[in-house]
Image (cartoon, rainbow, N blue to C red; front, side, top):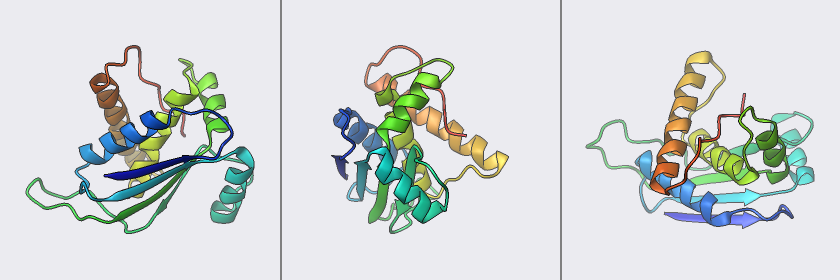
Length: 165
């Protein structure tokens, strides 16, 4: 998979981990290995501008997703996944840092960015959390992906609990 990560946030982030967890999530969701994804980390000012422009909501947010080809996981194991451009995920490390620190278990900015990356990938794949049933499905899948990636990477300690509401 071609996954490009650009950090324009002004904070040091673990770019390799963001790229790796995105690749893991896409593989786990059976997205074609020749698909492309772009992830960009921006500062609060840039995120606030995007949030206002696209959601008509003030203030910066943690993650936004902008789908391109509207790829979806194959419905059946025997189906060949489609390839294409997944789209863009925009992360705000400053917001992630505050959310991680405020989480009940408290976790690092990088742990939060990994969680938000998976969240963004799932949004690109058509998942949402507006309705309770959708939220349960998306957040369950999100946690399973984060836990699986952490186990495969040999990371110890509890996985970050979802901070997205």
